[in-house]
Length: 172
Image (tube, rainbow, N blue to C red; front, side):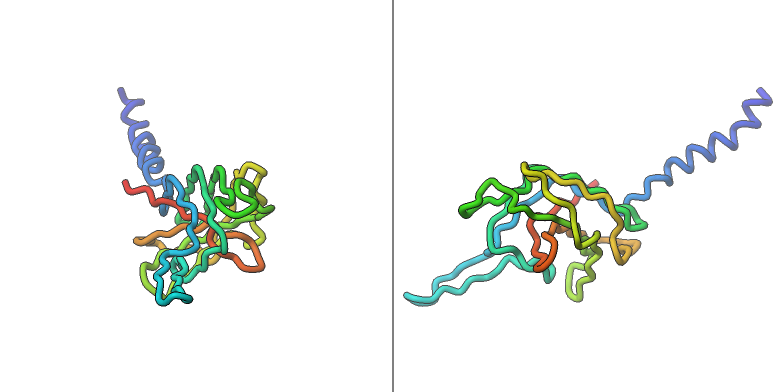
């Protein structure tokens, strides 16, 4: 009995540390592919006004992209793990292909401008022929302690880093 009482503080400390060990800032489960045009309204017989699908200041690409699955975890220190499946062109002559693209991740926590982009290495990771990718990196700059309005964008690497897909925030 004495041994059990002596070990009790260590066991309590161990459980308390494991409860605090989950240093997750935000999670994303599921992805949304980009539709480059948010709206098009006919103005006249020869002109049409097109509204581009800009998300928190980030431009879309010129073509539709689809994604079949996305899972991402962002830690409070900025470490990020993203597992994406099937990020492929959803239109045009190269439909169903990866366009030899490389992608990186950007987290934006502000709901209104000015927006701060917290990004992985802009060189990105190459998409597999089937559109699969994995990012294990650190966001720079580190994200804020609170990310109340998280948006995770998967973007193509230089020269014009547009967004190809967005993560769906996991609401606990």
